[in-house]
Length: 187
Image 1 (cartoon, rainbow, N blue to C red):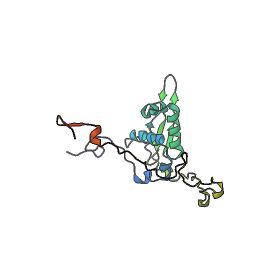
Image 2 (image 1 turned 90 degrees about the vertical axis):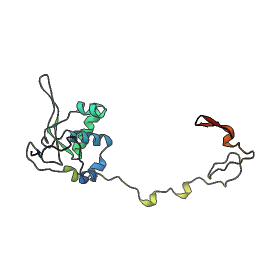
Image 3 (image 1 turned 30 degrees about the vertical axis):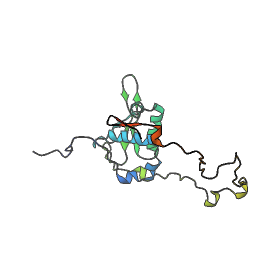
Image 4 (image 1 turned 60 degrees about the vertical axis):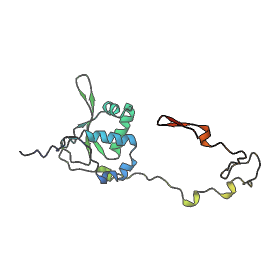
């Protein structure tokens, strides 16, 4: 009996994230909500419906346990960073309630037969500005003068404090009793 090449042996569904996707600069720039939204869109991809993946803001908000505005921002962020492309806008009227249809750019489109564009690999994100290494410390003249550590009662603690114990503490066995196996151990 020949098995269908379209079905897996185990039958359970999973999401595959290729290493080039995860290592891309665009992936690193995604917020946690955008990553969760990407996983939800990809979860609905079955290998044959790229370009017809229907995900609306309300639906996504319910799946992510977030608000509609947050879900909308997540989808816009994914689109700006090149992970998804809107194929068909949503329509919400009395007769027709259609969610927005999306295409994952890492796979070929099943609607237009367009090759995988992988737009997220070409996205140039603004780098975080870093200060010059010489600017990382303040000028020594800006620092408050340090007073020598003395035995003044209200001095600032700049060192590890060791307690001065004049009276020895009691032994742990004097302070509590433990029971093991139904018997009380008394030291």
